[in-house]
Image 1 (cartoon, rainbow, N blue to C red):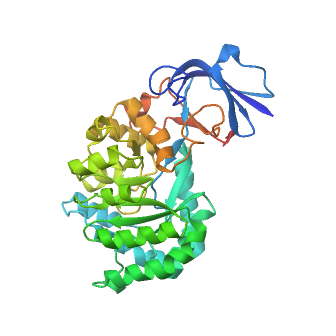
Image 2: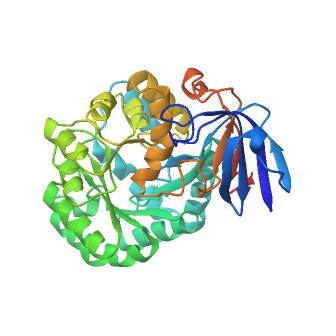
Image 3: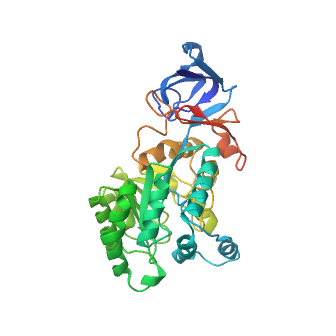
Length: 387
């Protein structure tokens, strides 16, 4: 069964060999989908007849957004913390502990219902690939069930047992790391693809982070790192050294950090929603891009510091506050996110890629930044199925 998506006013392919500029723009285009994959892309006048036709009515079409950093397995509410922060209290990593008790006390049904609700929010706004982390349980039982629940809804599951030092291990971070390495990683690895750690002042230092990441890697997991969100430190360079797919946040970077990223295939995933919510400094996207670093954008949906599921909102922030061009921001939220997950089948609309796409109620992708806060995603196709 072949589906023709016809009368696309502007199509973003993310393949510069296929059309204009770095996004490979095509105008008056069409896409043919067979068995959930893109089978043909080009001018609509050259499209062959198909079994079904769906009319895009002149809208812009972009690849489905790829979210490579989210925390959706949690319970509880931190709106009071947000309000206090807006009144002047600074953010510190310790706020994560507020969510631990609620998550531990929640049933699996409650946790899964929240995960499903937030994943649906993401999808309505055009996200078709979604990474989900654990990290709000931090007991053997809670970390295992977090990744197990997430694995029921996405292939991109990250085990983040070392998020902060939990209260019962206060002053005994090394003991907690041993628990992570000896018990949590063996229990969680069968349900996960990635291992992650928060390498930051107030969380885990470089050597503790190394122990967690190396144990995860030995268990067959790919490496990702929360790094340099609040302070300069060794997290970025540790991630590069261990071959991390991505280091995330990257707000406080030294010249050595930028040089290390530029000389590697590790992606710098920027999460401006967190910096917006905490009133923190913005990551220096231009500095990274001009140095040749591969940049991704993520929403970082979490209950404490970035409670948004909107990649269009993040794109608008990146253009306005991080000084990225609209094209750079869209690429970072699609192809960049795919690279941060080491995926070649998503983030683009080229022959062989998954037929994941977002149809905009706009004539151009530029409207994602031009019209911030407006729900521009009109239709979403995932593996060629509209829903």
